[in-house]
Length: 201
Image (cartoon, rainbow, N blue to C red; front, side):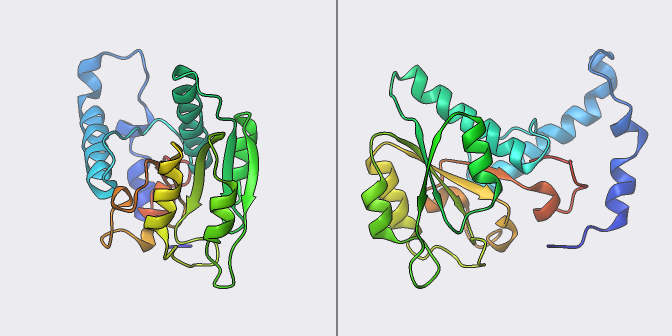
């Protein structure tokens, strides 16, 4: 985990943040809207993602939102993709979010080094798979050495590569998720940037 300085809680509890109402005059929330806009731009630069939303309130909510977008994408294309691949070393919420979204879940085994077994992935990747959900580093603290090959395997079959941002602070400033072939992701703002819990996924 990480340390969240108490001053962050104090800032988040300032009246300008806590006393906002959706129906108040637009002119009275311009400062907040500017902060949201600038944070979205900064997160886009850090991740390499084209679009960012601060609407999800937590990491699992970000997962669910992403999976719902993936599902809507394939439904719109009339592709019957009903499966999510999840490594046995993934963040624990991945299966719950996938199940809630109505996806079938198939587990991908780790190899003796603790990372994704590429042969197992190749054998389970099909045109029924909507996405592979990854946590990088995984829950064992290991970086997926074969990430570019993993991305190629998933993309060659038309699937999305999803990044669970639970451990993203280990990558920031070193590599952008988009450069690894990640298509969609969520940040855990409270873990990576020490915002208060519930401060955004």
